[in-house]
Image (tube, one colour):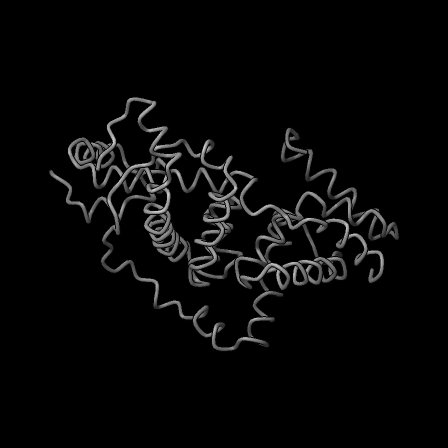
Amino acid sequence: MVMTCKEVWREVSNYVENSLPPKMREELERHLAYCRHCTAVIDGVRNIIVLVADGRTFSLPAGFSARLRARLEKDL
Amino acid sequence: MGLKKTEEIMASESELIRRILAGERDLYYELVAPYERMVYVSALSLLNNKSDAEDCAQEALLKAFRHLGDFKGESKFGSWLVRITLNEAKMRLRKFRPELYESLDKKVNCQDGEYTPQSLGDWRETPSEALERKEVRDMLEMAIQSLSEMYREVFVLRDVQGLDVATAAQVMGVSEAVVKTRLLRARLRLRDMLQPVLKDSSVLSHRAFSKGRNPWL
């Protein structure tokens, strides 16, 4: 069975999280082998997940901890 | 605490909680310090404004302190804090921006629908190389902040904070299926938003050539 692009997009999360059944994964990869469009979508999503999981994204504002401690000391 | 096992963390947390409840209030910061970022980012995921998020995070941690005796250890302490923070953030939204809160509660609007990727292109830089550049981090934060609340919340819980689907569903008060559908949508939108910007960067193109990859356009 050949997967269409739209079918691939529906499975992007499952694919990058490695939770597709083996047969479906194989079909999807067969599609990726010739479809650079879907390959780009999958790579992009995977990269975003890696990027945001890194602690450097959304770091705390400077002085956050000190202000929190001060607030706790005042109001606890 | 990075290398400690979950059980060890939970054991030391319940010991801290016991002592705090017994009167050692000054240990509270030590208990919540590992979750500062998690609490702040949770608040930011809904409020979308750094100073509101910080205020909300402080308030949520004060509330958590007052209800510390209610924490029974059924969920992880971090998830419990996140739930309190999201409730606090939602309360603020309801109070100050009722029209936004409306959209947050519309659970029907998250059907997958038809998705078409906005631009073609691959990434010419590894994620970790990209992150070394502050403008990439800023772009990423801006892109996430431009998502609608419904998508931002799920994306932050799952992908920024790494909660599993079941915990995210529990914290958000929606089904696991809703978490998955919204998350897919959020990820695809972010990818669409970031792709054109990253692709045009000269650093990215340079790296692509130096690695001998075939730049595509």
